[in-house]
Amino acid sequence: MGYRKHLKNPIITEESDQRKGLPLPPIQKPYTEDAKLVDLVSPDDFTVGNIPLLKAITNRISHRKYTDESLTLEEFSYLLWTTQGVKELAREGRITLRTVPSGGAMHPFETYLVVNRVEGIESGLYRYLAIEHKLLFLKSLDPKEMPEKMGKINNGQTFIGKGSVVFIWSVRPYRTEWRYGEDSFKDILMSVGHICQNLYLACEGINAGTCAIVAYQQKLLDDFIGVDGNDEISLYVAPVGKIKKE
Ligand SMILES: Cc1cc2nc3c(=O)[nH]c(=O)nc-3n(C[C@H](O)[C@H](O)[C@H](O)COP(=O)(O)O)c2cc1C
Image (tube, rainbow, N blue to C red; front, side, top):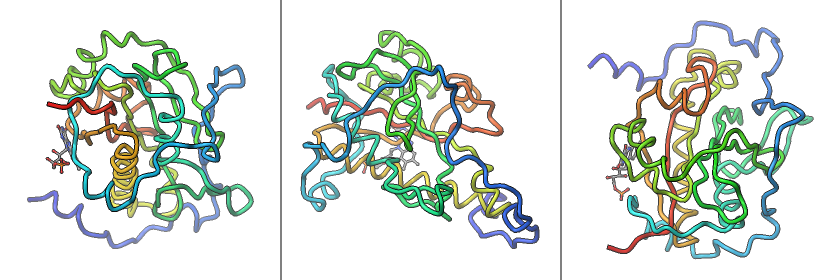
């Protein structure tokens, strides 16, 4: 089982770019000035999600059947906030402190969203701008095509495309490599798990469900969200919808 070497911490021999004094990479993927942004509900105004933590943890299961209901803009904002929300820009704005932990506070992830049904938002592909707590519109998508499309990308798992939204997390690895070099592998994969767990628990607070998905075709998912698969790599998928009772 050759892969087991990846479970171990490597012996760090190289100097990291941080130690060499190279500049810190941007803490968020840049976007153009003419980009179309969508305002979200501020965390200060959330009225949803106030269920006991123990109840959320105890009830959490993976859900793969969703109703046709839309999420409200507040519910969607709450899910984005609980998974990647920026609470503070620290060290002169050079690092972010968020609602989830991340090794070295590097937070190397970007969140892409397939929006099928969210009140007040056009269907399409978006990216969450965590620092601004806004959405960046990327392209229109037809929700009717999403089950087939998501099925193709995710090894036949068509249920993913039936979610009201689909979260797709990518990593821009250099953000972590800058600090940890070859040691970044475990750091990145452990950190992304925290994000998805927060999504599971947050869903419990709005009678919604999610399912962590790692069975996807790398190239197809990279192409779908428009990343090159090297400087930015898709990593994890999670559809969200209101729970359909059996
Ligand atoms: C890293 C990871 C990858 C997963 N990938 C898939 C997947 O591709 N498809 C799927 O239906 N469930 C997937 N799951 C969900 C698991 O099947 C599920 O967590 C497990 O069966 C336990 O059920 P529970 O979450 O309801 O407790 C994944 C879960 C994790 C943590």
